[in-house]
Length: 284
Image 1 (cartoon, rainbow, N blue to C red):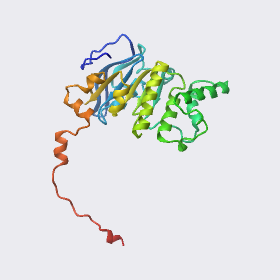
Image 2: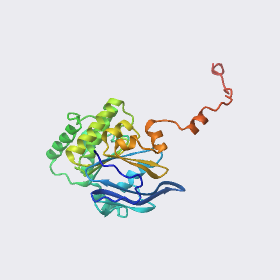
Image 3: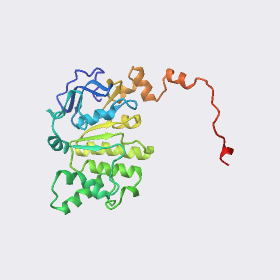
Image 4: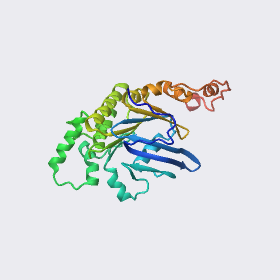
């Protein structure tokens, strides 16, 4: 049985934390996206962040790698505060992270090999190209794409592009992998391939994993722990069974994909339909 967590995480502590967020608040103008959040990400575990579009999921994981800085609060990697570091210091810290962006974010002008070695070029001086070729081959083999080294992104399917992007994310042997909507845009079969790869890499590499998703099938399959964001707060946290049976109505509405009664009432309101300004014959 996986460990269950209390819903109120404002004072959460964890002795085995790889990442920790303390009282984090992020505003864009007057819009408060994250509201005094505290959270610990356990080492070697997969934490999945769910919630409606615009609730701050991607904003949260960008703070975990200091791509965004909080208005207040602190972010720690292995007990070292990182939100206040300069870019040179952060570049060294970020070599411990892999990041799979929502669209893959491959460089269209680079082939698969060149995409995968891009972070290596940024952080290391390459002196042995044979070793680099072997590394690329090994990373592609891990995602089931060895043999695609010379392909360009335009020649790959959406699922293959995600897998190449994942091979790039693990090029520097990271301790943490952050996934932003990894199954978005994929059919159920290709999405499950990504789920299996997330599980495989977590097991074989022993990485700490954070996944942002609205795909509940994926969340239930891969998560050791699921947290839900709503109105800038964490309103639920626990394993898959805990979330399935959570009493909060907003949680149940989200995981079941149900429109609220208030929204339904607005959608079902009758109204007048204005006549089109132009008719097809006007263009003949």
